[in-house]
Length: 74
Image (cartoon, rainbow, N blue to C red; front, top):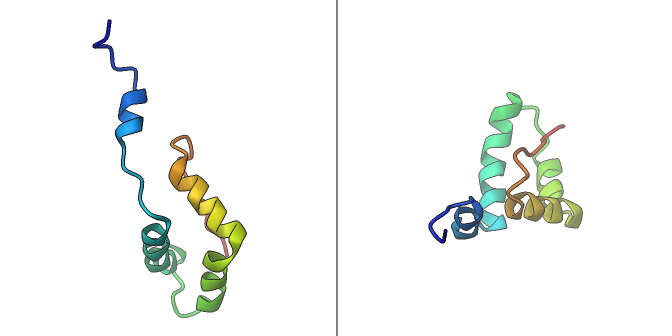
């Protein structure tokens, strides 16, 4: 009975990335995803990641295993 793996133990053992690492990664890939690196407002991207609401949303995305997608729009 104690050998049954219900998935909760795997979720508890999963390492969580730091918000700074995820932010740096997203800053590199968002221009590529949007396919408009020359026209992208870098200041708007920096402002989005510096905003308290944006930071909290990113932390929630990182910490919540049920969040499977992060929406990025212009």
